[in-house]
Every structure is written in C-alpha cells, then in structure tokens.
Length: 280
Image (cartoon, rainbow, N blue to C red; front, side, top):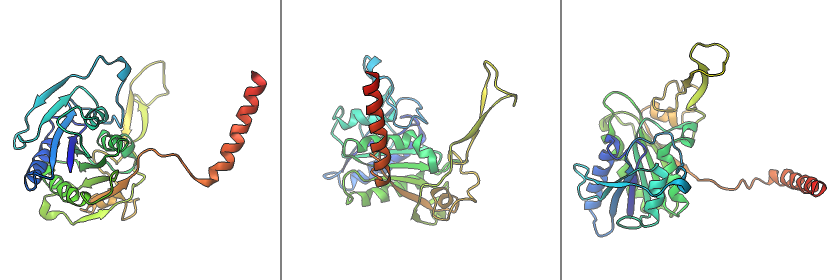
C-alpha cells in the first residue's frame, strides 16, 4: 500500500502530525509492502470541500519540504494549495511515488451528517477516487485536550483492513474525543441530516440593508456535535456522541440512474429541442 497523507488544517496541524507518526510506525512493520508520504496544504483550508481554486490563473504551486517530529521517515511537503489539489498533484506522480491510497486528517472536529459535503478532509478522498485511489477521511470530535492519539490508532486499524478492499473504496471515520480506554468500539454509521449551518442573520437582527455583517448560526455537525437527540442510534453523529467511532462508506459524484427520472429527462429534452428549433 502506497499512502498519500493530507489534510485541510495544514501541514503544521497537530492532527496530521499524530496521523503521520501512527502511519510511520505502521509502515515500519512491513516496509517492503508499505510506503507513505505527506502532501498537505501549507495553511488552513478548512471547509474547501473538493475545491482546487482557479488553476487557470495559477503560475504554479509553491511547495516547501517539512519534517514531522516522530515521522522523519516520511517525505513531507507543504503546498500553497487546497487539499484536493494536493491530492491531484500527488496522484499524478509529482512526488516520491504514485500513491494508491489517500489518508486525510486527522481533522479537528467531527465531519458527520451533511457537513461532509463541505469538508476539505472528505473532499481530498473524494478527489483521489477520481484517480482510482481508495481513501480514508479521519476526524475527531472537538473538545478540550483533543485525543488525536485515539483517532490515529483507530485509523491504522482501519488501514490494515482496507489493504484487502477493492480499489476506489472510500470511508469516512469519525472518532469521539475520548482516551482509547474509554472508546466503546467502532460501528458502521449512516450519514445523518445534521447540517453545518442552520441559517444566517444580520448582527442586529433587523431586515437586510445594502450592506452589513451576516452572523452564521452553526449547526451541530462540525466541529462539535451539539444535540443529536433527533438522530437514529446508527447515525454517525449519534454514534460518536455515544462513545463509538463511526465508519461510513462513501461514493463520489455519479450520474443519477434512477429510472424514475427517465420520463422526466426525455420530456424535458424534447421540449428544449423544440424551443431551440423555433428560436433558431
């Protein structure tokens, strides 16, 4: 297994340092069959999903070599690029080897529910899948004294199993902020309906004027879980709240092949063709 490690919090973030150290130890157990490197943003790109920026206007991508303490054996690069672009550049063989796996995290804050759509942590593995790479996004519940070590240990256990999975397998791992001894286990989680942002209001609570400041009313999805009482027991947020790590299989963008849309699409295409013929 050849692993590209990235994140959206930046190459200097404590989460990626913990993950790199865990992976370096795991690689050392079987160095003939395992390799890993770090290719991550050089600053925080949280909430960027799978965005790459305006690559048409970029003269290039700046990079710098780094060393992560305790993971000196892993080549490490910080790029002036979003997580998805870091993944793309790694996937096409820009660095030390061509990876077959993207490991993203450890994110500071849970990525559960609909917040996964906006997560740069998840966006990196979804991007890797477009190149045929498998991936694991790793996040830990926010709180005081975040237990990145617990999330890192669970991530390595998942990695060991993913070595046997088909290429293109994508998983989203969310770990509660607990010491390893208090973790209740790992369960399959469903994507809940938890939202990142509920709504936005002007700071003064009045009707919108020509300009002003919109105050975001953040939901329970990330970084803290908030109230999960309306979730089913096997929803991702509820599992983390109950002390379990939640593991969820994901799929990247695909055509909607629902047969129920066939008639709607055919009727719409016919009308569009008719209108264009009448116009031109």
